[in-house]
Image 1 (cartoon, rainbow, N blue to C red):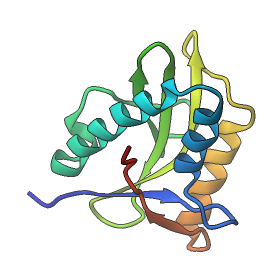
Image 2: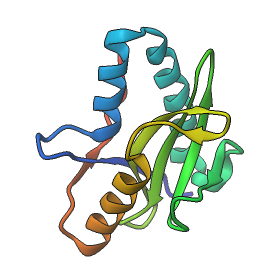
Image 3: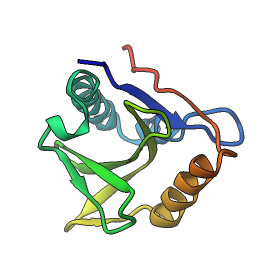
Length: 134
């Protein structure tokens, strides 16, 4: 089986949008690092079996081209991703806290759609997702 590649959308400052989201959240609440480590365990499963191999991956109402990875602990987050743009690749396009099954980050749906569209049209940037190492 071919391993899947995990990328993340790169913002204008050259940072991955999901990595930066975790870094900013961790300044206020260290519990987000535990959620990041749980996410990365799920990403490991995706690398070896693809996004359909884990039950934590669900579709989203944001776009038919954007799926969500459910990560829970004391807080619940969803990490949004698209399949591609390369074959056997997913690209993380955003993350949000979730409350009562609703994403609560302001503008997350529009940002995720815009990032997916930018990558699909070839003018968005992405970089390899770098795992957190304590």
